[in-house]
Length: 303
Length: 173
Image (cartoon, rainbow over all chains, first blue to last red; front, side, top):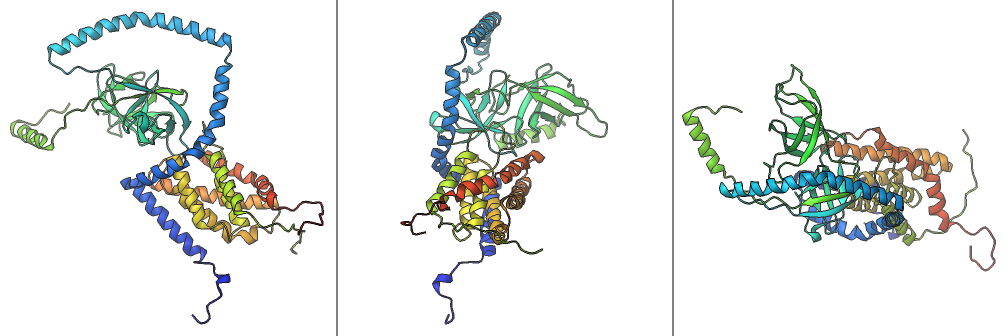
């Protein structure tokens, strides 16, 4: 220590040592986040601290949008009004029929002792901006945990299912779109009730109906609706339309490409649906017992 | 090739507050509600690279890393991807700052472009390792535009350090 340089020349650890330290720290954080989701509280704290900057950045843009709305021309409004009136007339008939069917359905349900299904509560939200991540398909909406949004809620627009809330901040929520690579949704073909799971393909516009046998009865143009067996999405919402079916003898499964019916890139207004009521838990115990019983009697026929 | 000597301006010392303000402004730009991200330059990376090249003693790898964490949290992406990429960028820019500053502004821009693309490659590798899909070559267009903004960044960010052209006897320098 006798020949230590004076404090003036002190520069701390070498740059490469610092880089190694911070790189290892980042890798640790990434692994924690990707595998165990441990980073969530830290992320929430930082996101809240950055919110003023974010708000500052959004302010001029939303001001411009408001001004444009204000000056929307009268002709445009009249045209829109006329269109809406026509649409209302068209739909009135179906709506009346729906009322009758609904009351009939309620009576029948009461007869068979089924639980009354309440109409799902919905929260109106607007898409603020597209997620700033070129690797995934997400949008940010302007309702957060303060308005009662929780992760896992389904999000729809006027035409169909848009996606699912995956992360919630106090004032904003992140919605993963159907087309995201990590997104899966249980569906049912409207025509014949065939169940399956549709996955996002990650290319931004299509989905894939995987694990369907090569001879499964799927045709181009089939409409997929939610099957509701996951407890996340309500039953019967339109999800996607089949655009291509490739049956290759080399593979056990057919390759079925679908196009979401919701405008995943177009609309601004969305509805965040309240979660479906809790289904009672299916205990592993009873499943084991059932399997044993089935084995004792006869092998179950596969569907 | 003989080294050309160009006249250089003597600059005033930088203000740390100005550095911080420039980074916050770049953050605000990055957090703007973009409809489509392709082709949007990453101004935070550009500003961090700029200060790493021009003020390597004041702009550390740790600062770049922390700003990266903020980007990750605000964007809701994999926590640590921007942090890692920005730390690598700051390190590379610091290591090369003597060489980069020898060139003219447009030649500097080309070298910074390489650094920015390398930074995006780091991010790409990190995300692909975590299981993301390849976003396509348009992913790199943002860096191309950010590289072309380097001369503008040099002009704007060095402006407070330039002395007035007129001579004033009462001013010290």
